[in-house]
Length: 133
Image (cartoon, one colour):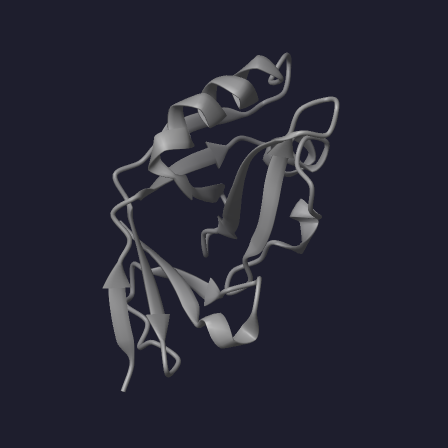
């Protein structure tokens, strides 16, 4: 039996545009090219001096048109502003979504057609993370 919990303290930002992967690749602490449908990446945004600003999960939608950033709701606006500051001429847009984040454990969750999900990349025993529109 799968257990599912809504995580109300999480927010989801959508990162779209032709340069979305290369844009994030130069800014975050993990390999964004590893993100694929069904495979999430856990990464962080750091200051130029290497101090932590925020950590988040990155997912790719099945269509491959957007990356979804699952972050702490309290940090979503700050992340959006920081990322927008580095956008320059990149073909990237960073937009808030109304998506909900859930955690699932004890079994692989039955996937809902509209859900974007992946095993928690931090620890295999941590279960799954799901983003639901």
